[in-house]
Length: 190
Length: 172
Image 1 (cartoon, chains in turn green, red):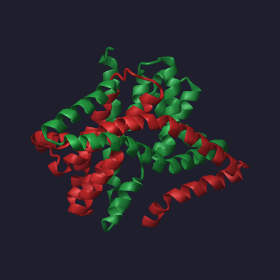
Image 2: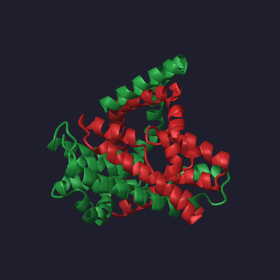
Image 3: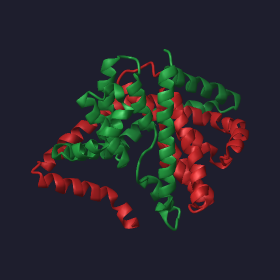
Image 4: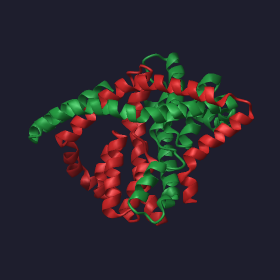
């Protein structure tokens, strides 16, 4: 992340100076930081609501039911931590929340799983943690409600007619991520 | 069917509340306690978001993305990806709100039911804000050596874009 972040900053300064957009870059440096706080505030309500709903799901045993359905498949994806009940609980709850499109609920669950995984290898991303992160950077949302509402706003005849195409593209994208993780975990030396 | 999709959020919440109440769970106190833990998560995320969004805003303002678009268009043509959608593909891994903005503009420019408009929508729906997710996860648990997570995640994104273009031309 250090390399990526520093690289982004250096590239924007150089590029801004070269294209004569130095003042815009300077303004953006201040604007970006406050936009981050604005974004955090704008998602705060939904985030708290969904962690609340997830807590209700957890206490009622509903989350357990959903994640038990996903457990066998997830054991194959996370063989190194399959024996750890706590990790597998959070991972399967994270994946089921992602499927339901509860992105703001999925994040705290995923972070909980990530924290437990990171405890086993501090500072370095283990194979399981890489797999978890890659699964979360790929979208597996069953109903992309935000995009559908954008289409509806633009006057689409049937805003949800993209569902089959979205499922197909999502499945291929997640599949590619999983295969890449498996391949790279065998050859990557740190 | 559209009404069902529109009502999916309230129906989910209502369904969970009814099920939990049936199981004699104190629904309201569970909800409030869970919401409190959401606030704690938010506080942990804000620093990473401040760092990343500062860099993204600077990158956008500098014109670097436009330069990249010009440089990349021959490659896109070979892959069968429409170059009109390049800004969306460049922004998508970096900023979710920027991608939604770019996508919404493409959808209204070319029409929501056009080939390009649909492809833009499917791209938005089948990919995630990769760098943001990576920053949040690795930042929250203190990982500095991310190994192959970034290349594998970007490979999934690229596959998602290609698959979106392919799936739309196949199904429509």
